[in-house]
Image (cartoon, rainbow, N blue to C red; front, side, top):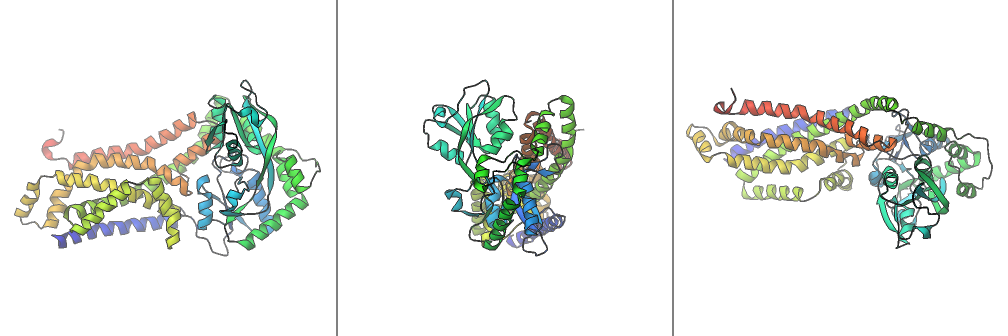
Length: 518
């Protein structure tokens, strides 16, 4: 019996080998991150461009084009260093883990130079200095000082200097957010009464909204720096500092900030540059025009049509990750179920332990562990392969329990009858028991695939831009959660419906003759 089982399981080893071959083919087409370390490759830097106005973001008029004052700063930095630079998109929470893992050499994303941050990363010299500002509704309570905020609900971005400032005022009810858009939407909708936030964000999100206004004097001092992995790349950091100093001296940094209307009094004091060159704030004016020009239905429809290529690209990646992960989940899940029912006691115990551990820990933690944790043991997986492994290994535990229930639901007499017909145990499993169990669990498998399709949104934390990440990017850029949400929801629905139909066709084909509809 066990000898035959080993032959049976060897077939699933072949399935998994085929899966790895598919993944290798996908990686060859560029879905996994390029490996660092080649001299010919450009210097890689990262930011979260999904919702990061005015730092690095996708142009409102052309979503295929990156822009922002930090993006322009990095292009100018590359020219001063004589190096080609390459942008890498990563989720905000994954920027520093990716830096420590070596996915890129630098991070620039409005990261504040603070003692807390300096404990985990190294910084360049400041490239921008600003302050905190208070934003309120025009028709709501008016505040101009920090003391005025006592007893009121105030929003800000988590893990920022603004949050630390508010923490020093215990009477303030603080609400923290991951995305700038959500901070301002809650203020507009009356869920909060004020915002304390960095000057550039206040200007681009608050001053451009007719319902909001910036009040009071600048508060505190905020300095941004380019981040490097702690204790590494000292030579590169020195080159960057030299290039930043040159950009301050020749006025190129002043020019960039002036074009974005971000040359602040704090920056002038830091740079000791009190000149007032005749530089029009062209990028600021372009952003304001794009924001104000998209209110009509005609413009919205044109914008939605422009979203289709981005949604299609995100849908292809979502489908590729989900299909590969489901193949892995089915192969491994069935193997685990067979081991628990027919394997040696120690094998059954290990399979049961795997199922309990995987089901008892969050999927997000598992994906982060595979992508960021395993490199410490010399296992470096690309983002696509790590996403597939995370989803597949997680869903294999649930599939294993489904298959185990399906196998146990097949009457014992079926196995006995097959053996009486001179079938071996492996033949009885392959031709009698497993097909019946498979027919029973087919509806559950379909439901699991639909769930996996939606859970694939979690791979956005490891630099993959699938459908959900595309939605976050578009909705936060245009302040349009409704229309964009309907489009993305429709995309998920269209992805799942064909597989539901295929599953029903398979159920009919696998059904017993007397149960089929005539």
